[in-house]
Image (tube, rainbow over all chains, first blue to last red; front, side):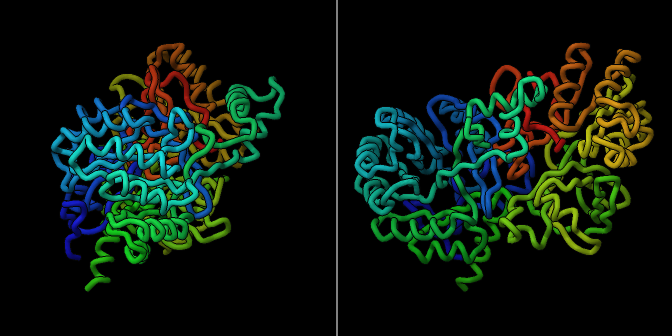
Amino acid sequence: MSPVEFCGMTLEHPVINGSGTFDAIAARHAFGEALEQEFPFAAFVSKTITLRAREGNPSPRLWEAQAGLINSIGLPNRGLEGYLAEDLPKLAQWLPVPLLTNVMGSTAAEISELVRTCDARREIAAIELNVSCPNVQTGLDIGADPHQLEAVVRAVRPHTRKPLIVKLTPNTADVGACARAAQEGGADAVSLINTLRAMALAPRTTARRAAQLPAAAGGEVGAAERDRAAVNPAGRWLGGGTGGLSGPAIRPVALAQVAAAAACVEIPVIGMGGVQCAEHAQDLLDAGATLVAVGTESFREPLVGARIAHGLAARST
Amino acid sequence: MSRASPQRRLLRVTANEPLGAYRLLRVADPDGPRPDPGQFAMLAAAERWGGGADERPYLARAFSLARVRDGEAHYLLEDVGPGTRRLCELRPGEELLALGPLGRGFSAPHADRRALLVGGGVGIAPLAILQDTLTAAGAASTALLGFRDDAHAAGAALLSDALLATDDGSAGHAGLVTDLLAAELERDRHAVVYACGPAPMLEAVRALCAARETPAQLALEAGMACGFGACYGCAVPARGGGYLRVCVDGPVLDAARLDRVDAHAGAPA
């Protein structure tokens, strides 16, 4: 497959990873140099980095859904300082592709600080904004409201000359309007879709049963389950209460939203959501995406990005 | 640490036979990296994985290597959900996809201290390969295994010379495997502990060993989507704050790294 131009970068092929679905440092540790020889993505997108370190959500963090996965990880990360001091030097030693750093903040000022600091680092090729974060004043996800989104992107834009990608949330009334707002605010590209808000209830045999037990009957684990049930009276399984749905289950939604966004903007679109093979990736490209990201499928098959890139190349010849 | 290829490997099932209430799945893997005791692999049937009732299983499932012998890898299975059910159905000649060995296994045994291998239910699996390794090294060990009942206790045949406990008293000591552990630690105050099993058992082992300042290594289990540090789904609370990822920081953790064993971080009870 011929190289792809994206925001001034030349990528070997159009397949990258979705933020938070591949930890290059952990994978390099698990698989050794073999990972460098066939790195599965044409660019690597970091997990979300926040100003301050976050521990993430209590367990359980995962629920296998019908043809998909609900996660409630809670964006654990070392914080900006830790990321720059510890992760960047490690990645710079061996990462064979451009690094895109994904950041999230709850105010324009916080996001500006993240972006300004990342702008100063040569190891970072581009910055992606995770706008699926509640505004501390309105409580509404920054990316869910086009007016709010445009204002935030406009405020952040002057703080970097690197490509600025806005990762759109699908949990909104009009994703096309949000894509346009990101473009009007000065974004160089948009990426979508993020996960769909979702919930799972605990199996009736564990938390919900434990919630009904008298105090003496449960023993220690029963007590822990009762505590959990007290926090989540509806018997929610995930420690974080709700989570985000990904995987094949969301692919038709992703296709519709990518098509809607691509129809509304002139800037490039990174399409993702449930991609498992070259045919799925081609669908998103046909819907108007310039790049395709793979997420949950990499959990099942670490090198699936490379397999999809080869498959796309074979289709184009 | 033995390292996996990032490429899933297609492996042929050579046998899948009942072992008490469990099944022992044997897979031809002559060229696979030799796992350390306590390491695991992510397994999925090559066919009919997903697309069944409820469209599950979707993700691969994590299993400890129970034994590696004569070019075969052995896994101990218990049918507890759609993933394990599909693997339990695999017949000789059918294939599965394996990613592994992954994670950190048990660390090398103390030269002159007896190893107590404490297992519960399907969690006995990594203790078999550990016992093989200790025996080959001439190190002394004693296996203490707990099960629900005698049907499950038949799984103890995976190890040699195990002392048994069952919840219903139908085999061995009537009570918990930690009763056996307490007695052994009373007899031999220099013993060290290697444990794998349900979360309540692991927590009881941790507490018992902590009270006696006995070194303990705990093999945890947690729902995980990937097995190689990507999904952050298998996190358990660490002593002193923060979380550890069972897949890359473990699955075997020094008990001193935990304040308590998370209620979701054990083998199926």
